[in-house]
Image: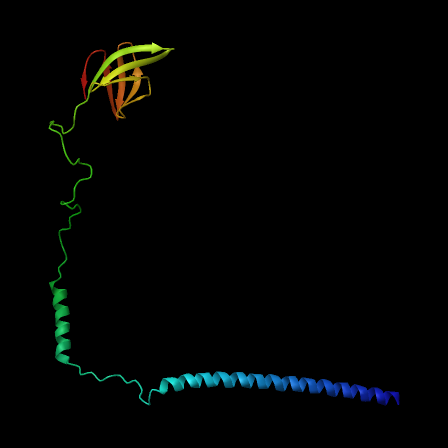
Length: 182
C-alpha cells in the first residue's frame, strides 16, 4: 500500500508540474500574440494616416519633352568642349608677383644698400682678456673675441694693431685708425 500512495503522490506532483509548464507556455504565447497585435496595429495605423488624406497616390507628373531643346543643350556642350583649348605656354613664374627677396625700397647708392663705416679705435686688455673699441657709423662698441657687432659682424681674432671680423662668409680685417667702407 505504501507503494500505491507513493506512486499516487508522485503522479500528482507530475500533474502539477505539467500544468504549470502548460500554463507558462500559454502565457508566453498570449504575450507574443499581444506584442504582434500591437505592432501590427501601429504599422497599419501609420499606413492609414498616410492614406487618410484621400485615395490619391502620388503620381509622377507628365512632362512634355521637347527633343529640339535637348539637342540644343547638347550642341552647346559640344561647342564648349570645342572652344576649350589647352594652354601651350605655361609660365612657372607669375611675373606680376613681387619677388619676396627684393626690398620694398632702395637707397640712392649704386648698390642699393647703405655702406657701413668701420674703424678700429683701440686694442687693450683687461684681466688677461683682449678687448677692442670699434666705431661703426659713429657709434663705438667695446667687444671681445666671439662678440657680435650690430648682429652683422662677429669678432674672430684680436691682434696688436688689427682685428679680424666675419660677415657671413666674408672675412674683414680692420687696421688701427684706417676706415673700412663695407
